[in-house]
Image 1 (cartoon, chains in turn green, yellow):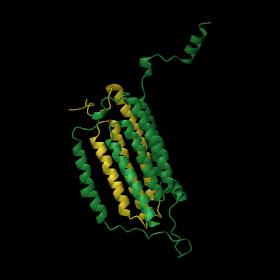
Image 2 (image 1 turned 90 degrees about the vertical axis):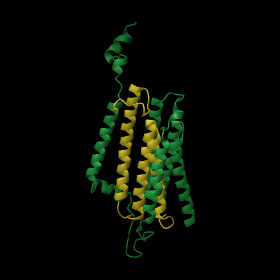
Image 3 (image 1 turned 90 degrees about the horizontal axis):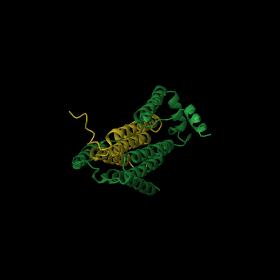
Image 4 (image 1 turned 135 degrees about the vertical axis):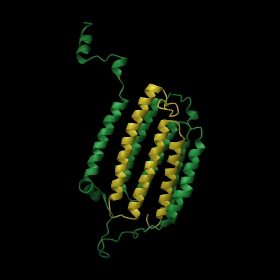
Length: 197
Length: 105
């Protein structure tokens, strides 16, 4: 059983990191977006393995369903169809970024993670009534309760942030169509349609 | 999961994802590619939060709450960022961040 979980974890981890590497190395930006979807799905599977079911669903809905599609639409709107010039999509001195990322991983993060003694909580929460300690994992009920009690203000601020983002995105991306072609009002349209008779 | 896979493995996966995303954000010239790198980094932070919640404080909801806030902020950031990219493309006819240099001193 333990070996099975380990094998599943390694597979999911390889999928996540492999797809992420393809995201940053793919020459075609559309392929990069599709690999990004694969990486997001892998992260959702990892959430499931970590027993955060609600977060896994949110991950699939928001990242796979919304953000990836948004990116694909942005690519469609900003790219010439054949993608000429997509081959030179990397910065000229890309190896600087590679060195920075590799050094950050190998010299900073990995030694810190491996050297720190993690006080992992006692494995497998005891069954209720078995040892007198219920020790239930926080579930979706606790999560919902936390959002309307302890984290009410951040919750509302997040809602306002979403509204501001929505209005901001519309304002920024809004195209002044009136300057390009005349959009008839309803009255003009009705008058235009009646004219031929 | 927590008695068969040590916490360090999950943290290393998240660290690897973060570094790959950082490389993408640094090395790409396409603005959408940079946004993809940023999304990968946010994802790796989320993995860290969920792993800490599961391994260290499974009785608290703090880790999950923060992960959901990060997802919210990432969604807003992607929407506004892509709107800005579309606006830039409309006036510059490119999404190459090297070419957009009108504020260069």
